[in-house]
Amino acid sequence: MQTDWLTFLNTQSFASNITDPESNFIAPLTHLSVLSISGEDAALFLQGQTTCDIYKLELGKAQLGALCNAKGRTISTFIIIKQPHEFQLILTTELLPKVQKKLQLYILRAKVTLTDCSDAFTVIGLKSNTSVNNAIDYPDQQNRYLIIAALDEAQNIWNTYSDYQAITTQAWLSLDIDAGIPWLFKETTEEFVPQMLNLDTLNAISFEKGCYTGQEIVARTHYLGKNKRSLTLMNYDSSDTITLGSHIISTENPELILGTVVLHTPQKLLAVLKDEAFNTNALCVDNPEKTPLTLNQK
Image (cartoon, rainbow, N blue to C red; front, top):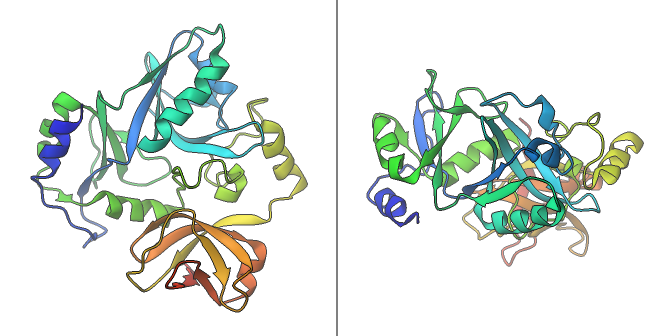
């Protein structure tokens, strides 16, 4: 159980904002868990289920990817790590049971074992200006790392970086929002084809690997250019309550739904927007406050 780890974290002080982006910092990624896929057929099995090319993974390297349903809708995004005797899927804790159940349906007679490692490992994020031993490079992110820590070692590992600034999970997620990394949760699972989440631009989709669940829809969207939505960074200047999956609407025409909130932290969010949303400056969240939004121009 993670009780001891969470109790330990409650004794720590965390900054809710990164005061110096160039400094070193550490974060508990309590929103993420580990699903292990092992067995002699593990690579072949994952090749037929995920958007990324499993056969091109390098040992100890991380890769973004996604698992889709038969209609090409993204069940979950993930970071996958190839280890010597298994593959580790890093995904949001609340979607892990759903992903495990979905994958289990496709195992049939394959020699594959799925193991929920939520009670065995925790995930820690680091930003370090020097190389970090026993850490995994965060996909396509400079100086950001993941540490998959056994629970009985997590506190000692954390204390190793006592000179790093400790930041909240939300502060780390803010970096993911800046990088356009679209973590999915219960409110947003199976809502978007991968291209709506810009996973094609994040090197999370292989269009050469062959068949996988949902591949026909993903390929058709790619080659026919039928995607009319994209993931976009937006800002807001308020403390209003925004929930995942909230609609984004036009203040000029509140009945017109133009997008969906995918991920948010205070004052910034990622949203999947329809193309026509970029033709208006009058966008807001469809919440009681009708929180105004602006497109981030960075």
